[in-house]
Image (cartoon, rainbow, N blue to C red; front, side, top):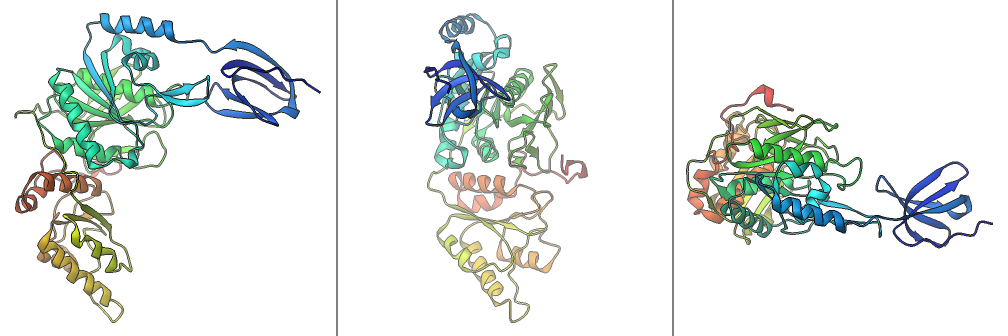
Amino acid sequence: MLIFKMFRQGEVVEISTSTQVFRGVFIKEEKDFLVVKLSNGYNIGIAKRNIKGEKSLGMVRREENTMKKLKEHIRGKALPLISILHTGGTIASKVDYSTGAVIARFTPEDIIGLFPELRSMASIRSRLISNMLSENMRFSHYNLLGRAVEEEVRRGVRGVIITHGTDTLHYSAAALSFMLENIPVPVVLVGSQRSSDRPSSDSAVNLISAVIFIINARAGGVFVCMHESMNDSSCLVVEGVNARKMHTSRRDAFRPINKGLVARIDYENKRVEWLKDLEKSRGEFNIKLFKENIKVGLLKAHPNLLISELECFKHFDGLIIEGTGLGHIGISETDKLTKENKRIGELLAGLARRIPVVMTSQTIYGRINMNVYSTGRDLLRMGVLGNYTDMTSETAFIKLAWLLSNYKKEEVRELFERNLRGEISDRTEKEYFLV
């Protein structure tokens, strides 16, 4: 029977079985197996009964000397100054091989250590705004981010990168687009799916591509920069009000909706292919925050909708309806089985008199046109807004909440259908479908 050597946590080990040799960092010993972290970042449990041999290869190398050198490098270089603001997520994290846990890395030295290519590209300012899963974001967090961006802009940075969880990244991009009026520098949101020291991570390509974009941009705005495809050759830059996450897990999940691309970043050659001319801001930079107690609802129209699903919105400040097709919801009594639809229509009419009620479409692509069918025309007569707009439901939700936070109700009704940040396209182009 093999007698196991007592390894220390963080020790690099080599363990042999009858079929494989495993090299990695020792994490812990359980009753029947040893836990080792492999070089790909994953933990593996090796059954003791299968182990034929084991040896130590030494402790994980410490980083103190490397960090000291990086600090000297960062202080001494005259490069474009870019600020990185962190809200959590995996893009600024790595595996601590002494414990096996994923840990956050937020200092400028940490960022340069994780992404060494940045050494010759930019000087980095980096700080933590919040460390959270993006589905937990609230309007108050948008205000924190907006104020942090404003502070960095006033300090004279070339641009700002925001690391963000991907689930609600497009909501935050839209929120910042409306909050930051006449932003003079690029603000780029990036995310990733794997921690930064794993071989399969997409974080380096996304973040470095954002830096390339900022260095070459000659105008401001809020953008999203993520993978173009499943490989690492390029990233796409999309306007913050037009971006949407279109897949649960793919690296190339973010696409522009009803609009074209801003730029393609050639990561391998560090070049920008401009696909749209950016206009420089003409007014004074200003920030308009969200009222944190504003209540805006988001209702998805569906068959067999019940009036009870709408009644909770009586006490809201605004409502987005994600309708079907060109912008519809069942409000007509066509036979004895559709009496509930009529009641829904009566309730909607009352809501639309008191609060802004906005129509968007579940189709994601395309434009609202409530003039075509009788249901749409009835909704228009009720005062439902959104006709001829082509915003995503997410952007419409953010825009309505922001308008209600900063303008009187009658102004909101007029401003909602006005193109403020590029969120409404001038015309629908077929080449923008499934970009």
